[in-house]
Image 1 (cartoon, helix red, strand yellow):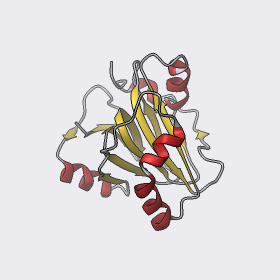
Image 2: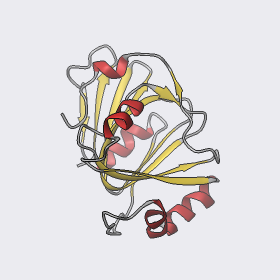
Image 3: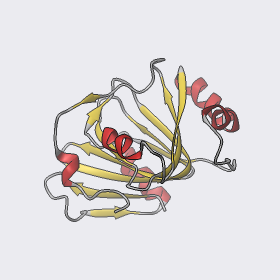
Image 4: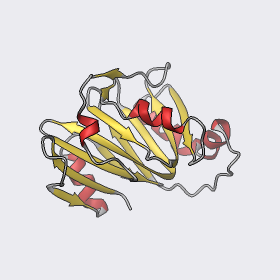
Length: 181
């Protein structure tokens, strides 16, 4: 189930608030400028489906987002529990970073967790199949796919180069509860 856990950034042991209902999640994140929506992710993907098949299966919502927001590029991140590069991929996203553009993900399988460092709070946003999240440019954040990742997310970009991160060098991500452990 999708949920938001809100922590003080200096108190990662226990959230101040947990929000589990859709309207509450949308409102809590919307108050911070974060877009969150529930979309249909009804296409059943085969284990062998790669980026081309996933983008084709979800061509209509991708086209709608491109038209509405001017996105130039889309790609797919797909991780499974036995992926040989899972530890390296997890480590890369677990470092606090920012982007010069919005980070948009539409989860079409599985789940993962964004941690958004907003002022003196950290919002842990657990996203699952059907969740669309747009993290505004410049927002300090990290992403945890867990030790046995299982998710497929479509990412959209205004920059044709795709995912470009500026790492903050902060060690805050290591102080918060990891996802899936």
